[in-house]
Amino acid sequence: MKPTVSEVRREKLRRLREGSFDLLIVGGGINGAGIAREAALRGLRTALVEKGDFASGTSSRSSKLIHGGFRYLEEGDFGLVLEASRERDLLRRTLAPHLVHPLRFFFPVYRGATIGRWKLRAGLLLYDLLAAFRNIDRHRMVSPRAVSEVEPHLRTEGCGGGALYHDCWTDDARLVLENLLGAEHAGATCVNYVSVEEFGKGNGKVEGARVRDRDGDGGGFTIRARIVLNATGPWLDRVRLLDDPAATPVLRLTKGVHLVVDRDRIGNRNAIVLHAVRDGRILFVIPWGDHSLVGTTDTDFTGPPDEVSADSNDVAYLLETVNHYFPAAKLGEHDIVSTFAGLRPLVATVPGEAPSKISREDALIESPSQLLSLGGGKLTTYRRVAIQVVDRVTRELAVRFGARFAKRSGTAVLPLPGAGPTDTGDGIENDEIRRLRSLYGPRAALAIDLMKERPELAERLVQGLPYVRAEAVLAAETEMARRVDDVLRRRLGVALRRPDGGGSIAEAVAALMAPELDWNEGEADRRARDFRNQQALQETGWKRRA
Ligand code: FAD
Image (cartoon, rainbow, N blue to C red; front, side, top):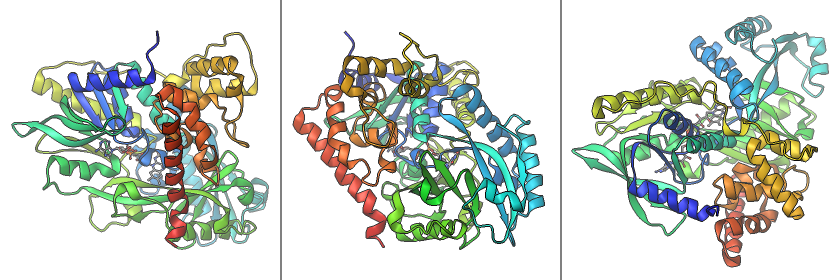
């Protein structure tokens, strides 16, 4: 008989407690997840623990773009653009075509802007060239008169035309999840709701970590590992302090806020590149299904990373710019469906530098205890970073333990699990089934079977969004979702797209998850209540701080 979800988790915890690993990764964001897959595919005994849900940190709060980094051209960072464009095209074509989709951008040029038409044209030519003309399509210049055809609601006053070009968008939390599922297929043990609380040492060198299970009985235990990698993004310095209370901080955290607004209210057809009214920084208005994402801000942040959220200044800064460039929109605070805020885990090299000027490149730091800590990085280039980190880890393992591992993992040709072939089964095809197959790949078969066995699971979870009830069951059964928030915010994109944050369906979702997670009725009710309380805090956070 197939083991239940609880049995699978208990078995994984047992493996963590009793096993011994080549690599223990702390943090289940895109960096940790990508490294776990790379390491497991090269044969390392790999473990990953995440204190909350996978991707609950920065990796679900990004602009959700897989991009070549057009604006890095201005800084002359050709190497970064070359690498990012290659990764973008590889993800879109081969590795994750189910998660990485083309997106057309319009870059308008206004009088007085630092980037004029000619500079834009030259930059985009170079951008196409660095992508070896393998991007979705080549850029196209737009004359001043044609701007209204491209973007009917965009301000035309002072607009000297612009250019259309392509990049991609993704579901950031799912990109993380699929890397973790891929890591597990390759033999890694990845568990959420397990936090590292201190490091185990021998002769001053890190030999593992003391962790706590935050989802079960709260018990603590030790994981033994030859190498420990701190991939905790914005928490990097906090985890370094667990290792060495005298460690000098290396991060400069900056906050990036997005607003979610009904797309009809703005009327943008493409992703639009704008310069913020207040300080000229680049902002995007990005189509996101029936919504648009407006972002992002970039301000220093010194509080606890767990408490990052939008405030009224962030909201005003973003609204001011959208309303300037889309004058008919007249957006007010009441038009905001939701907000989300993330922290850029940037490694500061030049003190006092403006946040937007700090390098987005990754950096690997080794402590005297041999703890490795990874800062920086982007969603787009996660696979390249993972290769470099695992190269370094395998070198260390060879020198220190004489261990040998495969030099390559094959991730350049090995699609993520959901991109795999789908079982066409009995040949039933409709829009619903096509959507499930294109999102979940082989795992869609389980959702389809569930819908056949229990027709009520084929019903929509919530009006106006495509998700069916079977997907909540699938998330608990096959995607390690353990809280209502995990389902509504990161497995399915409900929370950010509903003004009530999905609160009205919290009970329904908890009831769908309950049999998978062995919750009795009281426990399911408690989980739904927890979600609503947390949701209420997030939703009204910036309003309360006004
Ligand atoms: P995180 O995703 O934050 O993961 C770290 C994890 O560590 C967290 O989940 C946390 O819970 C866990 N953790 C912390 N402490 C512990 C502990 N003690 N024990 C166990 N686990 C712990 N990049 C792009 O390519 N495209 C974009 O469009 C883009 N937009 C962005 C927009 C914004 C506003 C921001 C802030 C960043 C954006 N980025 C983008 C960059 C990218 O999102 C980040 O660089 C990336 O997500 C960082 O991932 P990470 O794994 O390092 O950190």
